[in-house]
Length: 176
Image 1 (tube, rainbow, N blue to C red):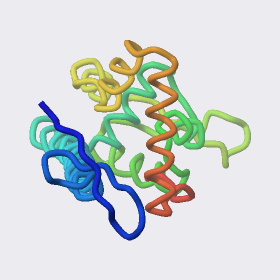
Image 2: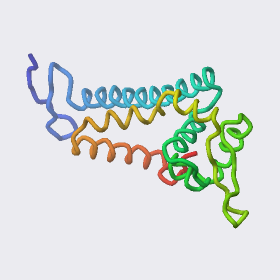
Image 3: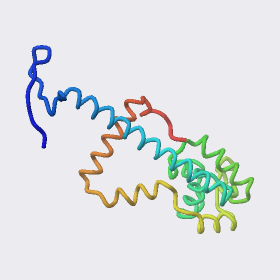
Image 4: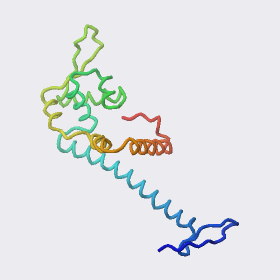
């Protein structure tokens, strides 16, 4: 059981527990929790990398490409800007994704509007088969997990992640 005592430290009364001041325990706690947070972030990043490697190995597509295929499968033919909104990337990024998918014969660009500048992207039969058989995007696991939480827990996670992005000064960084 913890025994509570007090010691004088720099003219302040600091609580003491089993001959360790709370300041020392607090520093240990801070260091331990900081390591746990960094470790958890690394695990998230590694999970994303592992998912992408497995997709590439098994289906010869990246996670961004599978997200694009699934968006087209779920919504039908879309313009590149609509795809970008669905998969949360910039229009310039989606152009490269579409180029690579077109080279793999998974999508095709169509000019069906009288305005020849308007491009629509649709799945080929091979793209449809891949979209039907590919695993769900990794973010779907997060979405499913968040759906099981209370609104208060979701708010807590959102605020914490915002603090982390603010610390890293990445809040304005575009997701690609």
